Every structure is written in C-alpha cells, then in structure tokens.
Amino acid sequence: MHAASAHPYRQRLAQDLFDALWLEDLYGFRTHCIFHPAANDSAGDNHAAVLEVVLDATRSLHWHGKRASGLRPFRVADLPAALHTATLAIELELVKAVEILQTADWWQDRMGRCVRFFRLAFQQAAFAAEHEPAILARLDAAPDQLLCWETLSCLKDRPFHPLARAKDWGNLDGSPYTAETMTALLLHWVAIPRDQICGTACAGQPVAAALLDAVQQDTLLTRARNCGADSDAYLWLPVHPWQWMWLKQSAAISALNTCIDLGSGLGTATPTASLRSLAVSGYRDTHLKLALSVNALGAVRTLPPRYLHNGMLASACLEQLRQRDAWLATHLLLCDENRWWALKQHPQEHALAAEPGELACLIRSYPTLPGATLIPMAALPVPTATGVLPAFEYLLGASAHEATAWALFDDIARMLLELGLRCLAQGVMPEMHGQNVVLVCRGQKIVSLLLRDHDTLRICPPLMQAQDVAIPAYVIDRSTPNTLELDDPRALLSYLQTLAIEVNLYAILAALSERYGRDEAHGWQLVRIALEDCLMRVPLPAQIASQTRKLLLDETDWPFKQVLAPLLGRASFSTGMPSATGRIGNPFRNAA
Image (cartoon, rainbow, N blue to C red; front, side, top):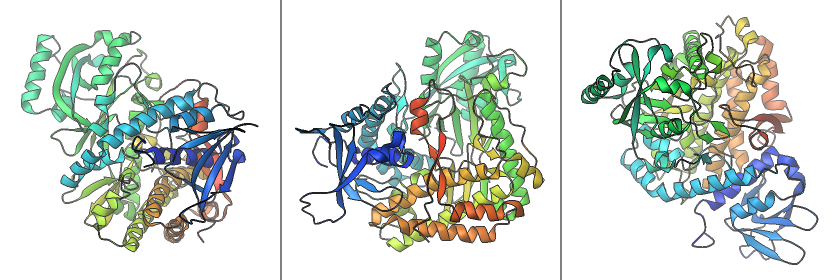
C-alpha cells in the first residue's frame, strides 16, 4: 500500500472504475484519455504509464499504472490520483477523485449519483476488507460448505462494476445484515390471511415446517394461538428483520394492516453474497429468499410475485430441455424454486403483474449431492489481499502449477459454453453470470453446473416453436422494458456473449492473468478454442448455426452490457436492474 492509511481495496476500486468507464465509454470517456510514458520509472518497466483524463481546458486527473493489451488497456497502480492544473498538482483520495471527475465539462450526470453510489461502494469495500481474514479462516475450516464460498464472493462482488458494492439501506442501518459479518439473523414472522396470499397452493404451515425445528414450530404455534392466528385462515411467513422495520415505518402498505405480528427469534439464517438470499441454519440444502426494499445495483431487491411465478415456468422449461438433451441431463442441475408466497396488495384477481412483492419469500432447495462441493462461479475470480485465488487453491492445491490452473479454467469454460449453446439450440438462454451458476465439484473435477434464480431465463418464442419446445406463458409488466421474451435469436445469443463470457469467464481469466502475470490474450485463446469445439459439437438448428458462428467468432464487434449510463440516467428505481446494450470489440480478435 502507498500509505498505512490507504483503503485496503483502493487499487481494486480504482481499477473497476477505469474498466467500467473505458468498456462502456461512458459519456465518450475514451476520447478524453491520454496515455503518457511514466517519467523516471525506477523499476525500468517500459509498460509504466500515466493515464491523463482531461476534464476541461485547464484541469485533468492523472492515474499511475501500466499499459496493457486487450479490452482493458490500463492497469491502475495502488497510488492516489492527482488533480493537475496549469500551476499545481494535488493528490486526491479516491472518492474525491470521482467527485472531481463529475465536474468534467463532458460529464452528463449532474445529480451527483455516481459519487454517492461510489462512496457507498468505497465504504462497503472497506467493511469487506476488514472482515477478509475471518472470511478466509472460516473457508479454510469448512471448504465443503456452500455458505463459505458465498461469503468469499462478497470480497469482489460483480466484476467490472465499480458501484456493485453500493447498498443503499436508506435511514435504517443495514450493516448487521450483510454477508461479510457471517452472522445469522433472527427471522421475523407474520400471519397473513390466506385470501391475501398469492403463491404456491398449500395446506397447514409449510414454510414454518421447512425452516423451523419441532420446538420452534410449537413456540410459533403458541404465539399464533395467543393472537388468534392459529386457524387455517392464516399462513405464517418469515420476514427479513430489516424489511420488517422498513414495512413498519412505511404507511403506504395498507394490506399490512390485516397481518398479525408473531414476533422474532424463531429460526435463523445467514445472508449470502446476494443479500436477500439466506442460508437457513440447520438445513444444509435450503436457502430462503426474502424481499428487501434495499437499493443495490440500481434496483430495489423486493420479490415481485410475477418474478417468482415466471421462475417456476422457467424451471419447468429447463427441465423439459434436460429430458430432450442427454448432455444437459448429465451436466445441468436445477435448484427447486417452486415454493413461494407473497402478500397480495391488489384485490383484483388477475393483478399478479402489478404486485410489488414487498413482503414475500421463496424457499430454494438444493439437490442432495453426497460427496460434492458447491462453489458459485462468482467465487472463482476473488483474490485475497495477497493475490491468492482461494477457489483455485482449494480445487488444485496451493502448489499447483500455472498450467494446471489454466487447464481447470478451460474445463469450466467448455462446460459453461456448451450449456449456453445447447440452451440456445432449444430457444432459451439462462442468465449465466457468476452468481447464478454454481459449480458441482468432486475433487478437482467439475462434474456439472447447477443453476439458480430461474426467473431470468430468456426465451425466443419463434426459435422454441421451430424446435417444438413448449413456450412458458410469462407474466410480464408491459409498462417496463421486457427482456425475457426476445423475437430474434441474435438477442438471445447476446446474453451468452455479455453475461456468460464478458462478465463471468472474463472475470476469471482476468484474475488468472493477474495472478500469473500472463497476457489476457492467453485466456481468450482458450475460450475461443473451447467455443469453436462446442460449435462443432452442439447440434444448433440449421437456421441459426452459421449466423451464430459468425456472430461469435468473425464479427468485429460484440454486444456489451452497459450498467453505468442506465444507472446514472434512471429517473427512479424499480425492481429491474438498469442496463442497456452497447458495443465493444470482439474479444477473440487478438486470440486467434
């Protein structure tokens, strides 16, 4: 570190900031960048450089670092940025540098939203760095536990997104409910009249039975009986404790008036990296997903019932594909996300699309896989403060050679790409970023991929119809942009390119390149070869086979998922993460 007081993750945050600005070319960022050779470089590194970001005619920001090849041409050094004018140069803390960046005459966001979210991300990153030793210690003690790998993912969060760590909890403190603390929270419980519930048809109290032991169930029954909520007219649901505080201070939810408070302290669950998904204590294969009115990634993390409903349809669709394709039957596993319930706030019978899901829950069941270790792909690119990649060390051993690490990456890339192409062949595409895809490992071998969060399954009805695949009847809010139903196979393919390759695989190959001092072109070459092999092996429909190959391997440009401009430009926040599609150079251009 440059100084003892420096932020432990300062360099990572600065790199994420540059990468996002450059890849997205936010507000024409690239045209305002000038790279200079570093003066008086004592290490004799001919790649050392200074990045000058011109703000206006009299001011510029300077960052030290190294030039690099590939999609991201600059590696930021762990040194402060500096504001340069005609007469002086002032070193800046990172948040201050972002604040100054927003004063550029070409910067279009004048609301200060970027620096506000970046400040939250900066604080959360410091919080994560503080907890890193404890997170690694628990991982060393129990590497067979999914929760330990989920927690490790927090140290990086979404790749190439400088604002991903920003969690806006409003005026209610959210720090006790973050995954970094590894602390189980106490569930709150409410009794809701069944005629105000939408979701899975059920009798009895299935949620309590799934989450509580016999003694806890008896205690909850006693509480319900004392409140007159022990009859079949009520369903008992858990609520996130922060969400319960938020609901109580929000006077806008009139439907809450008919709910009966059953109190807290029965059942515990530990937050995972996805914040609203909790690992249920005492139930290894069960996660609980709860609504949270927290702003993260530019979206409010509630659970709209239409998402939960669509997730069930998507899961059935994926299971249909498993029955049709022997490779998928062997290599694709699915979490069961068919049990969910939500408070109904609209009396209309067919108002599912309008329900906000501010009090809702989903029980996610993982398949029982004796002897297997589950590792979210989001954990693979996470480095420690010393630059070690714990997931690769666990799978290969601390003394493994670089070639072994790249071979494992190659195996993972091949399986992910084949999954994507086989789904494309049937007219669907899962959202395969690192948080949704879990590796099923036996020893050093990746035997299958486990998908979760099925509500993001994209479909192309014309292609599905041509392949005789049943089309799920999604419930969609047509007042907002719809990315679930796509008429063009190219749009479907773009989700493989953007989320699976440019976010998920790129984050891993970038981390390996950094770990071993290797040019990123090496990793891209492995991905390209794997993709070429998959294209030869996967039986794509004739009408899209040649087009798919051309779009992936031969096109000059690729689609790129923008996140900053949509986030900074959104007038108000809803449940969908703001995004748009831009273009970047084909990452395989220099990997042939």
